[in-house]
Length: 276
Image (cartoon, rainbow, N blue to C red; front, side):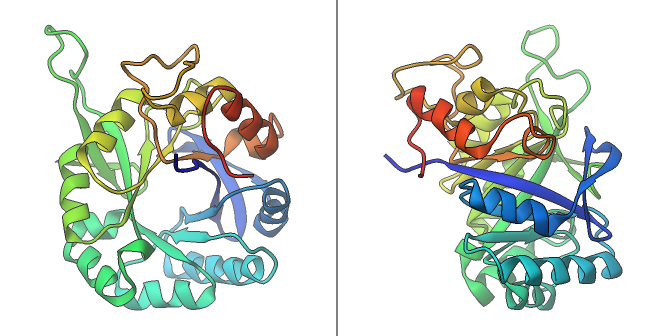
């Protein structure tokens, strides 16, 4: 069984780590280098840095942060935000990134994914999908079939593109991993969108990182559990347990509500194979 990854997410703006709820109400929560050191020491499997400002100035600041972190920690780093061309990817890789994440730029020009994969290999190309349920979608026949759209520009613009169809196309173009962000769940602590995660996992053959909504240890275990696991959590059942390849976590860790060691211990007790 392949070990599941626990990945702290550092949303960086103007050199500081910030966090909001549903991509709004952004507040400063700490220094990225200090947090990276803490999470590395606590057993993080990877680190993800997302430049939420995504301007040239903020990207340059983020690259300085990546250089400082890469000099001190020895776990994979994924960098995203403001990556518009292969040269931007090259700068991030030269700064110490092992992978690069793209969202809006790939939606604007999907061929970018192929160019990035040709330059560095699909294993270095992460497609970030900011997905949100569209109005009127629901589980009952009266509400219609469930549907999530891919949003761009930090969750502000509805592209009208079906998130699942976009994931399939992106992998065909060269994306080697999907970072799936639920806008509806982001920062709420109400749990991951298990149904969305399950559908994306069933649609693509590449690893999927679940993001948005982690509020309890049980919820993290739930998104990592698969139907092959013997013990379900309160949130997950054999029918909806998606079995994501990794869980992205921000608020729970940033605000000291739990630790990576506690997350892994609980997940393992529920039957998830984790890395130690």
